[in-house]
Image (tube, rainbow, N blue to C red; front, top):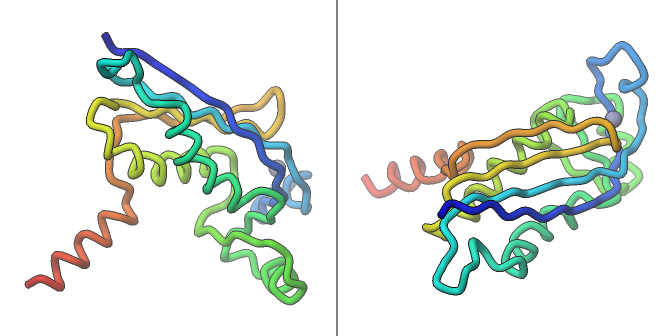
Length: 158
Ligand SMILES: [Zn+2]
């Protein structure tokens, strides 16, 4: 029977939204919460996925961004300042909204969960505050980035 399991993760992170005309254009931070929900068929031991394995897969992504500034690469205003002062910065190619962060997690995590053939769907929710949540969900699939890698490798074999 299809069964859902989920686990939550937390981290602290700064960001800003350059396009925003209100408060979000300022440098500020959130105590983010991520919930990873996996749907699949339980194995012979009654597990969709060992929570230990789930943590092993997700934790490196959390450590990478914890106490960092998540910076849209096109944000020239803060980019140079962060680099010049050696602040922990993670550059991405999208405005750092909760929606985009959820999609970013979905694409990278779905690649990792592909190795488990019993897992069907992934749901990712990202909360910036206790009252705001962005959610993406879908079937486990290869992330666009990895598709490019595969296409590149295929081209090299020709
Ligand atoms: Zn914010």
